[in-house]
Amino acid sequence: MQIVSTVQGQSNVCGIFGHPVGHSFSPVLQNTLFQALNLPAVYTAFDVSPAHLPAAVQGAFAMGILGLNITIPHKKEVMALLSGIDPLAAQIGAVNTLCRRENGFWGYNTDILGLKKCFALHGHSLKGASVLVLGAGGAANAAAFLAASEGAGHLYLANRTRAKAEALASQVQAHYSIAITVCPLEDLSALPTDLLVIQATSVGMGSWESPIQDISFWQNARFVVDIVYTPWETKTVHDARSQGAEAVNGFEMLIYQGIASAELWHGISVDDQTARTLCGLLADYYQNRKDTK
Picture 1: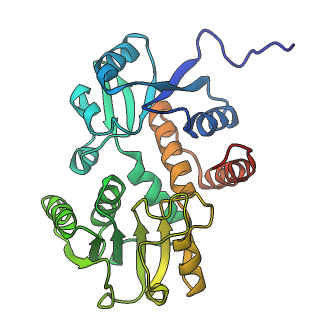
Picture 2: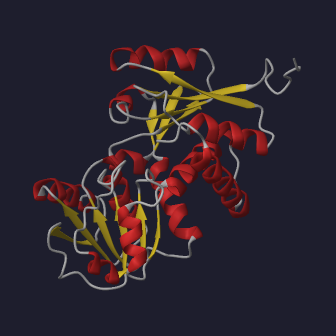
């Protein structure tokens, strides 16, 4: 038996609300980061059903919890329970991070910050670029707003249901003056070369599938981010690399959005080298742990 002195009465408490939430990797991520930076904080997961979400948010504030991550199915519903919302998160229409303020929690979307960091650390700028987003759900929303807010030259949206892609295009253009083209997922032959691609659908999660059937399409891509990371090398990543594109899975985005949350909670800035080191350490752990699906 050993004395545990890293958690004391003055330690800050952070956590994640979701339902279910037992599978979350965030406790490993955040507690590793807190320890690496000598932050007096602990992080845990809270399984909160939709019916109990209002009481949970109110109770968390009453108990002095410093910050929270919010995951499925609460990212939209939690917005009505907050004292304020970051303008970009309001535009996206989803919140995944709560930060304690004097009169309640404020909501932020660090998914978009994690994705931005992923592009930056691989040396790719969205400014003036042709960006293709595959999908029209929550992750695609963050990706589309990232491209618009970073000054992309042209945004292409492709989704199986065209109406959903058109709705996302209208949502983005209500806030940004950006050229947007909605194109069929089945035929992307009219798109330009040198694309930055964000694969924001769940296709390929736990299976050997990709939303793009014609692998020669990936010759048009310069850099690809697939938000899926199970399996570790997804078919999208495999196909893109086979055609000469640089491609990464969504694990880096996961880690970087978590770092962005910690920066907001603690008022700190994590340098790029620390971010890369943490990502590499956690990637090795994730791939080698026995419960990885």
